[in-house]
Amino acid sequence: MAKNDDAMEEVIRRLESRLAKLEQAVHHSQTGSAGSQSSGTDTSPGASPMDIGHCTLPQVPDRKFGSDVSPFRESLIRYIGKKWVNGTKLKYYFIEDGVDRGNAANVDLVRRAFDAWKEVGIGIEFEETSSIDNAQVRIGFRRGDGAWSYVGRDVIDIPGRYERTMNFGWDLTRDPRGGGLDTPIHEIGHTLGFPHEHQNPFAGIVWNEEVVYRTFGGPPNNWPRDQVYHNILRKLSTSEVEGSNWDPNSIMHYAFPAGLIDQPIQYRNGLTPMDGLTDTDRERARTFYPAKAARKFTVLKPFQLESLSLKPGEQKNFEIIPERSDEFTIQTFGRSDSVMVLFEDVNGEEVFVAGDDDSGTNLNAKITTRLVQGRRYVLRIRLYLNWASGDTAVLLW
Image (cartoon, rainbow, N blue to C red; front, side, top):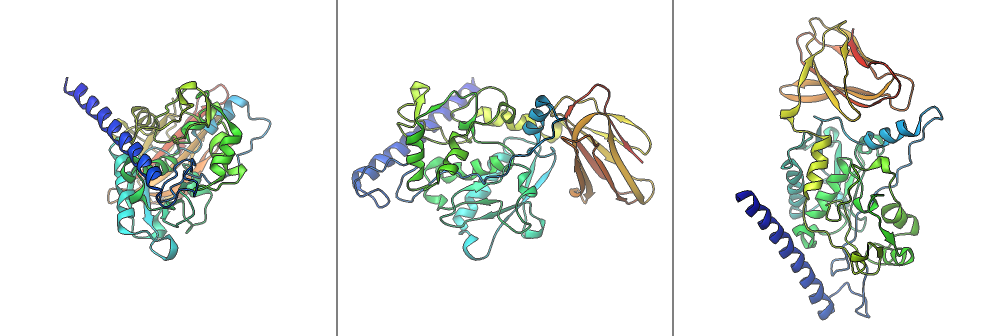
């Protein structure tokens, strides 16, 4: 009974927040607050006195595959490829210089957004660092550059070593969505590897495309047509989304004003997701990143072949404690696609040593590095799929 009461309180809280946002929008339109068009008819999404826009994902070239990679194999690689190996600790850094520096209130909101994801109970860890050299996630607050993040492992594969991987281009303290938290929670969702939910091919959305182009081409977004297509109209392939259910309340979903959606008919007058993470958001995150308690370690010893009996997307974790200091090789065997990452346990913290991803090739994941006697190492292997018959295994020598 208490569980039902808590659920009802959560629904009421979200509805109250949604009502407050509607009342605020009515107030601004009636008082002609700064930021609205002179005609008083600004209908651009997110239109407000503070020129709040929408998330603008950086355009990253699609990965190309050879003719020997089957469509099914390609689909699984695309589905899993941007996700992190579970157990990864992502260190984030707030840029402190020049136009990318954020004020204390905005920085605090982003910290709270990381806490919101931590509370989901996932196997990815977040830790703030004071050194940009140690950070995978580098956060700026450059005004006028929109809100965006690279998706998943693109964070380490695409931008330069000291470039931003995430940005917030407006004052989050004046963003009514989730009390300023929804935008950073959304961007951190991208960092975890999750795409825009309104681009889910199972949503069945039929757009009034020219109205979409015109609306998002105007303020506050001012996007060119290719950016509108990339962030809204472009449907993801079925291989890039989790499951088949569309969640219009997902934290990864945009809000849309009336006139942009023709179908489903109930959203012709607009679609406004409720605040915060939904149960579907949490379930998807836990599916890819189960909590630490659910992870087990197998001891990997030299010249002992360990089977990888995994389904697509599953992961196996190994512990290595060398009995001598030497150069070792770790390699998978079998016709499979996998990503393999080696960490060293340094005072309880896993520090990246090396990694390899053999997906889309006829090779096997392989790491050759020096291991030190008595130190503890953690090896994590996530399987994309076995693309041909036969077993898959890993060997240390």
